[in-house]
Amino acid sequence: MADPRDSLVNSIIGAGSSVDGDIDVDGLLRIDGDVRGTLRVTGKVVVGSAGRVEAPIRAKSAIIGGTVKGDVYVSERLRILTGGVVIGNVFAPRFEAEDGTVVHGDVAVTGRSEGAEEDLAAFVRGHGDARRFLGAFREGSFAEPPAQGGPSRTAEATDSVLHGD
Image 1 (cartoon, one colour):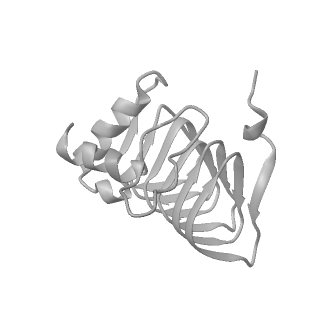
Image 2 (cartoon, one colour):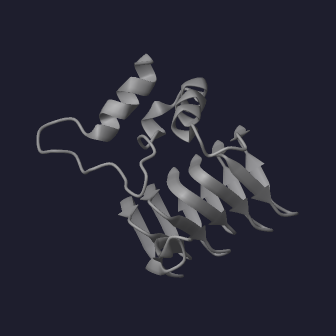
């Protein structure tokens, strides 16, 4: 049965809107405006044809019809629609691209959801910029906010990727 969080839009960045910062959403995020920062979504990210994102994206799945400048990491499926552009590396167990799409970066498509966390960590290690790595895949959740005065779980995961722990 499909998770309702994957189909009900609970967060929208509308046309004419601009957001600068880190965004964590539990559910589905639709972007028709401009976003700069980082995106971490437990469900699906939809970037509409007018959407412009300058951020790494970490989600369960994504549909891109606009422009994304940043790495895209999904744990299930990535679909790029006609006119969609991704300037960055892509990791997805399943990947679809319609005619007229552009991907400028390395693409890893594993064909399997099992072991996605390990496959993604290896992909990030091979591409060297762990600063944009957004933490380990977690079933139905995302990394907790950093504790006051201490490292975040994301920082620990990044350190683990960097040092091969």
